[in-house]
Length: 173
Image (cartoon, rainbow, N blue to C red; front, side, top):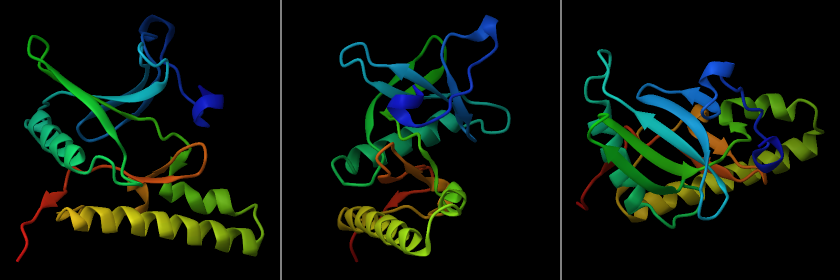
């Protein structure tokens, strides 16, 4: 997994090792899974309603709709598929695994680089962020929560905008 994603994955305790745990967000947990058709690794977000967020599934389903409308736009995290399992009352969203780190970690990554390398990296990240935002605007979708922790990088260093829970589609006018 480390070689495929550049992400150091924390595995669960031996009795809970059904799948690697990547993190926990407001609406659920994210794990790594392997697509049995392609053998590629994907991120799986498991969403359940909770006392803290009783409408987490509804919010995440709307996020999925937004991501479907953004399909094909560079630098937007691709949503491959989603399934709602009625008997378990859980929504699973399958996404591209961008595991090099979030944007807020970029400063740490840059500390060991020269100033010219830092500038080149920051310019490229800004171009990629701009490309994603322009693509969203062309489809009248606005993120409303752009911040470093909502940028993820893949192993090649490509920036992806993530977490579209606050995003909205606004009609022209």
